[in-house]
Amino acid sequence: MENLEIHTDPWLALGIVIFCIALSAIFSAGETAMTGASRARMQALDSAGDANAGRVNKLLENREKLISTMLIGNNVVNIGASAFATSVLVGLFGQEGVIYATVTMSLMVIIFAEVLPKTIAIVAADRTSLLLAGFITLVMKILGPLSSTANWLVRKILRLMGFRFDEAGDMVSAHEELRGQVDFLHREGSVERVDRDMFGGLLELTELTVTDVMVHRTKMRTIDADLPQAEIVREVLASPYTRIPFWRGQPENIVGVLHAKDLLRALDTAGTAANVKLDAIMRPAWFVPDTTTLRGQLQSFLQRKEHFALVVDEYGEVMGLVTLEDILEEIVGDIRDEHDIAVQGLRRNQDGSITVDGAAPVRDLNRAMDWRLPDEEATTIAGLVIHEARMIPEAGQMFTFHGFRFEILRKFRNRITALRITPAPKPTDEEDG
Image 1 (cartoon, one colour):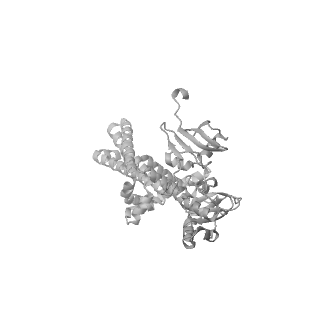
Image 2: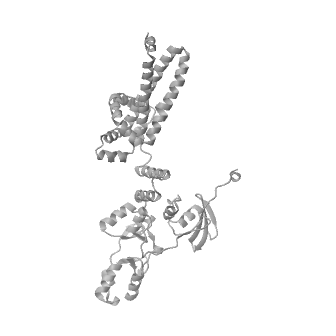
Image 3: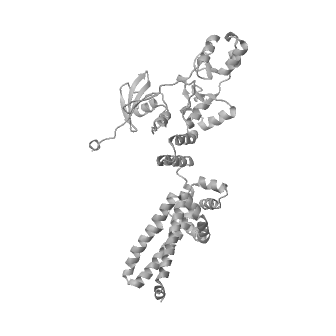
């Protein structure tokens, strides 16, 4: 009897089916848009007084309930539309109506209720989530109890299967998620390379230690405190640095740090270099452990209002020095002024290779060439080659790893002083075979 009533008004039947498909499209778009919406943008709009952004933030606070509600609503309207269409077409065409209903509803649901709305939501996730925030909030209030019940039942079933939710956590940290998002936007062309590097450097301040950016002790500019006064003054004035460590007895025995401005003030007062008392104007050296993170050292620099520190290992031996500029360069890139010494550490060759100093940091090389050489096991490029080769190579030897060919050009004692790095050619089909 009910079928006869339905068949008397096919337009009503068509309208109900279209209405259900439209609701399904809204649920699909809402689910995709909410999961892809930018939390940062929503927070900014909410702070600016956007009511819909506030609704989106509240919805995203309980993602599990939101997703389950969208799935429940989507499945209810899809099943309802399919069942109603099947009933109508069976009444019109008999048993063949089941086939017609299956084909027709499959096409309509896939195209108009899934692919089309989700594509729109992916392209404009923020705009779609703001547009549908009010509707989804209303649906959450209506289907909320059913969704909570479904979630409770699912959790019970999973616990019986041995799954524990308290043991499940985010496999990706917030920093890794941010870095991955910025890398993705860079590949898409939305973020410039320099901006990506700056953002990545900022995030890595908590992961890197002062040993990753310090100037090694073999490259430190130091002065013997027992030299004649006039010679010390000449060396300080000739140095491109304003802070210079002084040592006595042996280079590792740092007794203080002299600031060039303090020396100039003392010269102005004393008149001659012989009358300057270096011990009086020399500042005590600040030693920091080699395990200090860059973020921690940056905070210490700001708190002490210092720009210079000496890095020591667990035995108290001086390993090198770190400055505020070294840490800032991890964020903004290389900083040079008119007094910096131009070191020929990197030279591009016409054949596509580069010639680089063995002491060049891997991180600086990656930033300059936009490479992805690993820097977890070694700080310098020479250290990376030794680590991968498991030996101290001789001049002329070549190695291939991480997609690059490394040729040792020069070596001094046990130190690799120069290398040529060439991107390794991809193997041909015959070589693969």
